[in-house]
Each structure stands twice: as C-alpha cells, then as structure tokens.
Length: 97
Image (cartoon, rainbow, N blue to C red; front, side):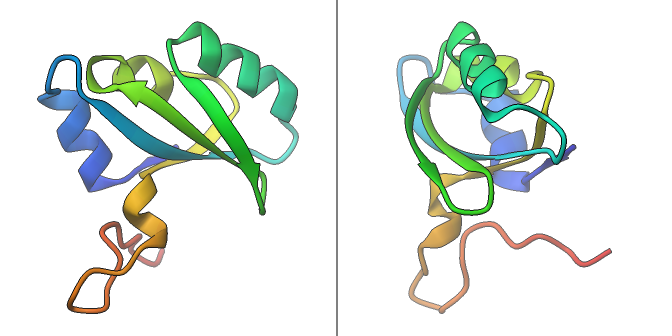
C-alpha cells in the first residue's frame, strides 16, 4: 500500500480533533462497498466516490492510522492531491517506480 508523505506525517503526529480529507484508491479485486463499510468502521465518513475507484473521505487526524489499515485500500493521499499550490505542483507527488 502506498501512503503519501503528508498522510504519514499526519498519522505519526495527528492534531487531535482536526479533520482531514483523504483520497483512498480501492485496490483492483476489492469491493468498493466493503471498503466503504470498513472505512466507516474505522471512524471516517465517506463523502463521495470519485473516478478511478477512489473514495473521498473525512476523518479526524487521530483516526488516520486506522483508515490506513483498512484492507482493500491501495493508496492513501490527502485531498490536496487534486489541488495545485502556487508553485503548480500538487501537495502529494507519488514517485515513479
């Protein structure tokens, strides 16, 4: 499973009571419905299903670790992945390889 550097930082040093938006890519062969249920059990709220088998969820930062443990999740990135910063690069940049 790929966990972006930003998500790893949040998981290791969460700000209690502060929510974060995550993008969860569901692995091929995993049921999106099963992953949605498991993510909800881990304490997250599924906001919407995006393209490419990706779920947009909101979760308190202290529950990010539990979301990262959900079986069937292939990639975990922050919601800022889709946005661009002033330098033109997204917050999370997945290395090739």
